[in-house]
Image 1 (spheres, protein in one colour):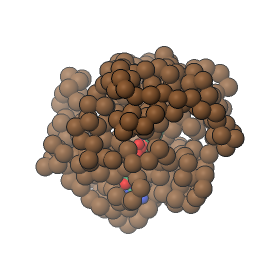
Image 2 (image 1 turned 45 degrees about the vertical axis):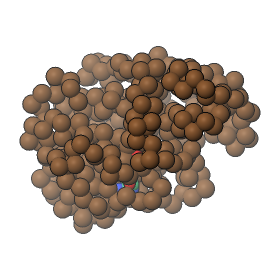
Image 3 (image 1 turned 60 degrees about the horizontal axis):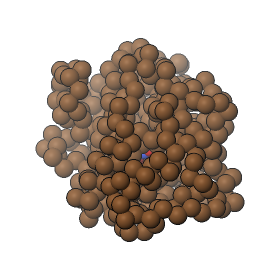
Amino acid sequence: MSDPRRDGRWAGKRVLVTGGLGFIGSSVARALAEASADVTVADAMLPEFGGNLFNLEGVRDRVRVNFCDVRDEHLMALMVDGMDVVFHLAAQVSHVKSMSDPYPDIDINIKGTAAVLEAVRKVNPRALVVRTGTRGQYGAATRLPVSEDAPTHPKGLHEISHLTAEKIFQMYHEVHGVPVVMLRLTNIYGPRAQMRSSHFGVANWLMRLALDGTPITLFGDGLIQRDFVYIDDCIDAMLRCAETPACNGQVINVGDDHPSTFRDLAAAIRAEVPQAEVVFTEFTPERRAQEPGHFYSDISRIGSLVGWRPTTPLRDGVREAIAYYRQHRERYW
Ligand SMILES: NC(=O)c1ccc[n+]([C@@H]2O[C@H](COP(=O)([O-])OP(=O)(O)OC[C@H]3O[C@@H](n4cnc5c(N)ncnc54)[C@H](O)[C@@H]3O)[C@@H](O)[C@H]2O)c1
């Protein structure tokens, strides 16, 4: 990451990234390696999830890779020992999957989080632990933009597991004094994401449809609002929050208070893939029941704490992402 604010801050810092071969984890690992941190990633490379060794291409010689599972507390104790910062991103990440099989979320997102924090409490309670929760923890917005104080009424098992994991973080902070930052991310898109299934990030999936020559399918009239955030902006937010002591113990939205519609997203994709067709389809009853409607984040807290707001326009982010997947399609399809 070329942000001059980062210069020197991470040099020599020992950092563990769980889920560090996935979309967001590898992007954190890359940014930290470029900022001269001593980076280790821990990833179980479970099938179906977004782990991909190619995600570390270009920094592979500067990042230690450890294939291990966050549910193994004994291994985690070895992994967190001596770390200055732990980014805990290993998770089951599909809402759809969680609705047909709830156990991986309970096992990985709840038990795995407890295992990481127990390891930190026992061997390295001064390490800062950063987590990436989801806007889905709120459920449907009761008021827009959605602030961190809004009620939480999740619409899926995945989102419930994330909310529970956040409560576990809160407890380890308040009771055991572990420094933590609890982020709630909106829809993140960009290079290095899982592209094999529609069950993961919607923005990336619609790009894949366009690149495959398959119509981009939008539910309803396509006018539902979302705050899509480009991966580089997300990583900048995560690192700034980790760098700022005032973020310790805080729940913090990472999103955008200037939303786009799904039609805007489709238009950004069509600007890069002009032959892409857009079709509209009715919500299925199941989809309708889980659709939270308009959502965009109040980002005044992160703005006042670390001076962050996203800076990548949707069209620019989509252009970057499509260029990346055009070049590296065989690594992700
Ligand atoms: N991508 C988004 O838009 C988004 C939005 C909100 C929150 N998040 C959260 O951010 C985190 C990272 O998401 P992502 O999009 O990078 O997903 P991803 O699937 O690309 O990465 C997750 C990584 O975790 C690894 N993993 C899964 N279970 C593991 C285990 N038991 N032990 C060790 N490693 C394991 C996977 O192999 C994968 O590499 C997740 O907690 C996700 O819920 C993502």
